[in-house]
Length: 269
Picture 1: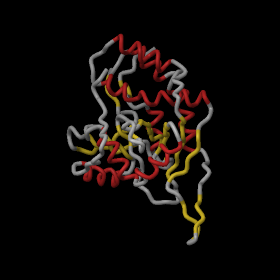
Picture 2: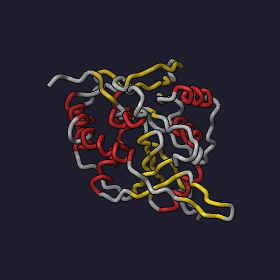
Picture 3: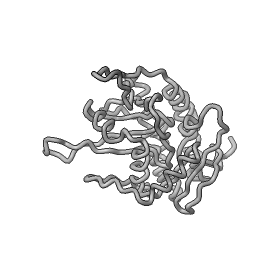
């Protein structure tokens, strides 16, 4: 088998669903190291040459991961969703988000591997390490992880105007739901975008979704929070150049002012 030179630390089976069907497979990517926004073909988006060994690459690009993950993500990004409407004294009101739980255990275990995409980013900036790559091979070749959390597919209501969810090189977003009793600081949940208008949400209880929907209903604010979690060091990509330029302009002055700030370690493994 020919050796792969260009290795994607954000898999193409994720990025492809962020392109409109009627557009060429080209994104605009902002690089904070250079301060430039340039066009990037999906083949070169979030990729580096020889980031890890060929054995790990074959696991990622084969039937254990991308060949299974790709069709599932496409299905979820196109799935017809039930849309909630609230009846009130002034008429019918559309809600910002529509959600449904994913109950298929095979799907939930497979989708849990998405949370480990950050490990590929971390691996891509380090020297080769066979021991670390062996662990990653085992994880990505497995059926996945059975997390003791509910997994929701969430749609941004297409009837409500909203900027797109952008791609960043480390896609998993962490948020803390405060404990109103004061006994603990709170507990963590995870969000992972799978298209410009859909994302996955790992929660422990119903209130975790309610908290997210209230705090992050402004998608531009959500995009800025995701970038801020990487201390604004992440690469950002979008098919909409005009929106990406607006987002980049707002990044430098943005401060979430969270009581429990979370930052992502980009050089860990």
